[in-house]
Image 1 (cartoon, rainbow, N blue to C red):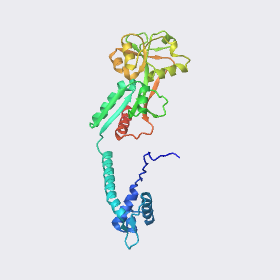
Image 2 (tube, rainbow, N blue to C red):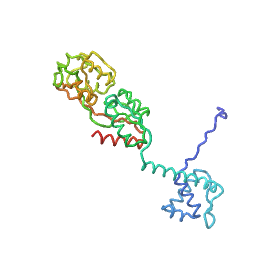
Image 3 (cartoon, rainbow, N blue to C red):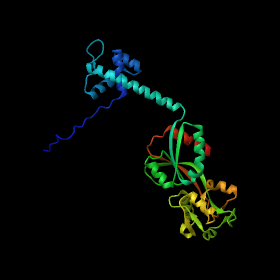
Amino acid sequence: MLDRSHEKAKISWPYMDTRQLAAFCAVVERRSFSQAAEQLGVTQPAVSLQIRSLEKRLGRQLLDRSGRRVEPTEAGQRLYRSAQRLLAQEEQLLAELGEEAEGELAGRLEIGASTGPGGNVLPVVLGEFQRLHPDVRVALSVSDTQHVIEQVARRELELGVVGAQRRHRGVVFEPFFRDEVVLAVPRGHRFANRKVTIDELREEPIVLMQEGAGVRQVIEDELRERGVRLRDLDIRLELGLQESARSAVLAGFGVTFISRAAIDPDVAAGALAIARVEGLEPAREILLARSSGRAETRVAQAFVDFARERLA
């Protein structure tokens, strides 16, 4: 037989149900089960059951029921003093939470986004939201879709805003807003403001975003449906993320598929133009990513509601 005397004894602490403590305190204060039940708005058998359960859980007799009035035992008197403090703390906590739920928004919002929404749409919406709620501090990190999803899964970010869905058992997705994907070309390019064929597109130098970028996945899926693979195109450059691709097109190194929102200022300034490709209607649902099972903060929910209305 093994000698386990050296092992530490495991102590099992009883779970304290505040409803049982409230019933116990009411009986002690009223010296009566019936009056305690009336005070709590429950039946007398319900109060008796709560007290019996509490005594069984603690392994102590807490009330002396032998006289005309119910009196606490010595153990009951000690418990009563501690229970009063615990119930007062519970009441204070509930009051504070109630005030927080009704008061001004305050706190920190950690949000991540892929380069499409993170580079153009979200900074403006977050700025407007923060101006509306000056006690809120916002931290936005921008990276590729896959990295944002992994950060959400690890709960490093409360919210993620991404341009494509990746299967991840620790993350749930929901639609947020729609984003149009266009073919951006340099100013004066032969494709500018035209609809071109896929055959014409095959002959043009392409700037492509890196794997993991949401726009790249959208275009790859669109082409695949028409029997075209990315490697069938003349891909000259694979450049990081959206801003890198935009810069390369501005410099005249090729054309790229990109979020419309990312180049609207360049189009308005005449630095870039937009082309359409026959048979392709690339658009993507920008998705909101949350960690499954994580309770959402009031700040996060307020931002989501604000952004949905703003981007509708």
